[in-house]
Image (cartoon, rainbow, N blue to C red):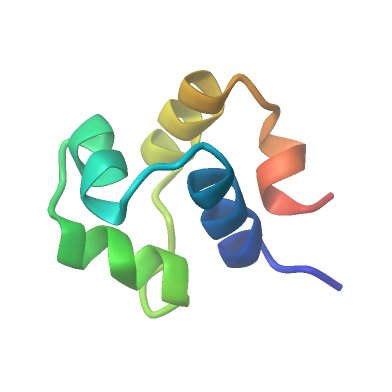
Length: 65
């Protein structure tokens, strides 16, 4: 089963964006965002909501539900 970290990376790459680009959208650093994509840190709900709005997808899509 695909994990949410994979869907985050796929969405970012599909849209031609860097980790730094998404970190700016979330108001964090590239290093922190990288930890979200690798699963080292859990993605806070507020960032999940921001990503859903930014990519225009549902939370279920990102969370692979």
